[in-house]
Image (tube, rainbow over all chains, first blue to last red; front, side, top):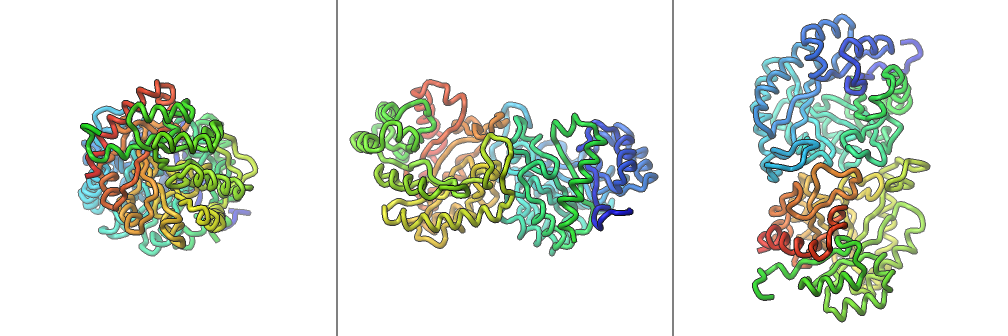
Length: 287
Length: 287
């Protein structure tokens, strides 16, 4: 901890940022760079094995800031898959299970339109009903669900949950320690209500995860990969981070970047840059 | 008017939909297809000449549903340009001058980031101040300003005005017949507050323009061109159009499509398709 400012220890590597690393490589990378927490993804966890991963992160002393991701509640067969995701989050001791709720039924990311529904209101109702069915199962297993509003450009194909306000409204019937929300700078920075809703989320005790990454400009051809290292895009992290801190959130802060250049870079260099940018652009606003 | 359902006469061709047509070609196209209104753009109007355009549309008996566009209020030298846009709207007898307010100062659409501001709150304050400076000038010339919230994916480079609620709040200090808002399905369809804010806009008498076009899926490499012919994308026009009608808007309805395939198609075919889709997907919800 020598020389680190208070707050630096809250940095968490979301595993997708160093996507080509396996679970053991990511865990070892965190150790090498003095990163104390990790956000895991289900696919690489399954590859390494669930129990083996749980043991590995436990032995490494890493906190699991989240498991990504359950959700896609607007399609079929979501219940079985999400129960499995809850079980995995429980075994990993994850602080929360992130839910990306899904888009319009039948709209597939990257695929041409075919046999889909345009009924957005109905899709949003489906999400509420599915959440209602999932909460008791998660509650029994002690897993906190974290609703993640996604940027409106993903409304059609990934998440009909588009604002923090909408996520908080959706969470409101449930205890805050059972259903929280994800505050992700990339998804909400544009929102005129962002600061007010962050304050509300804090007052309601619902900030389950704070994720930071920048928005590229111009956006790349595949908008899913429009996320960037903090400082490389258009987002001002100071007001958002200060609002999250003022709202009382004191958990880990994940860096989750989907970006072709970041993915092709040497992961050790990515971690070094990430630590520096976190220290420069996030930590000062946590005080 | 034979055989046309009530409402069909409200279709307006936004000139950018048939971008390769000059002003005379677009006016002649409207005549050929029995379209009674046109949304003009400043660049082609300047090319044909302002007075010549005014005379041409008047002689053709076309209503000018809007002039696109003023705005970009977050940069420099916006005042002179917007006063000129107001003058043009007045001479053309346009129902309103559409304002696209501009993005973060220094962020240029399609260009790499360089020498820009990340201060979103300040950019929004600049917009409010610029609007305040522009309203009296527009008022003197009898031109109604129409604030257009743009989809949040354009927040950085084109419009820090991102929701209908934000636009209505921004308009609220001014009389409704001086400052209205544009309701554009493409920009607001994802918004959980859209229907409520459309009702509010109607109650406040602020719907200055209703524009319809669809959202492509997947989005194209240049997201600016993500607009599509009604029926070719993910948007359900019925609830939005019914809300606009219920809110009391009875003006023209523009079809404004930025889309590479539409632009490369035969404009006469585009107009034929546009009329049919308007009749099928918009008109039934106007009753």
